[in-house]
Amino acid sequence: MRVLVTGAAGRLGREVLPRLRDDGYTVRATSRRPRTDPGVEWAVTDLATGAGLAEAVAGVDAVLHLASAPTPGRRTHQVDVLGTRRLAVAAERAGVGHLVYVSIVGVDRVPMPYYRHKLAAEQVVTAGPVPWSVLRATQFPQFLDELLQASSRFGPTIGDRAILAQPVDPAEVAARLAARLAAGPLRGIEEYGGPEVLRFDEAVRAWRTARRSRRPLLPVRIPGRLGRTLRDGGLVTEALPRGARTWADYLADTYGGTAGK
Figure 1 (cartoon, rainbow, N blue to C red):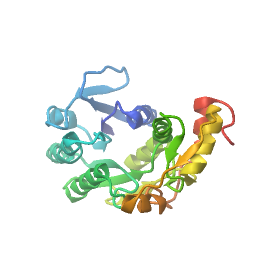
Figure 2: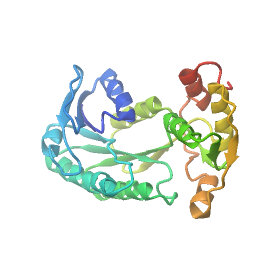
Figure 3: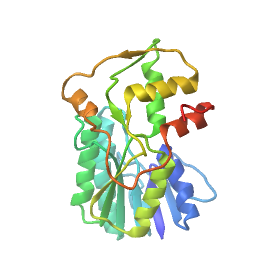
Figure 4: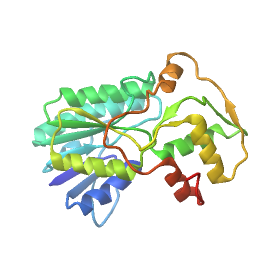
């Protein structure tokens, strides 16, 4: 099977490419800039304009759509919504048999602008003519780590202690995506999360221990519907199967030590 991977240079893409190659897929990957890789055919495309899309989808059996523009602004709509529509149209014209879209657990519940764009992109895929699957994943531990670093920029770690998170390792998401490609179109939405649900204060304690930090947690309650949704589990899922690598595993690999294991 020949698979096109959009957004292949991103965090998840860097896990997906070797996984697909190891599983025997022929891989074509897209990027907005020219790249070289002896095991991958790279195609220069721009979802915001459609440049290069027709050439990228030509001759492929499936498309694994990872590309996104999470920075707030007009580009998110251009890439995530309109770009997904352009990709779906090009895939139909090329006779692609399976379009897999990677989304986020909570896009249908959490009232954030970026999530609204992701949900709209899901709707483009599910309403389109190409047989499809949607995989919603929970947050990656790297994202949580970066969030905690940003929240600690001015001293204490600032955050709502009761928010719930469920970090999932991107390599495990890559494996799940490879399995979905092998199984064929689901024509449904699948959720995939990490092995444990953590409160924000629990995640912070383990993070501080791993970094040997004495920074205190300064609790700040997020107001309104957004805060209620995050505290009520808007970002987590009970779906099975789940990943196996824990937050403590990530912290131990990243900072050394036991990280609370």
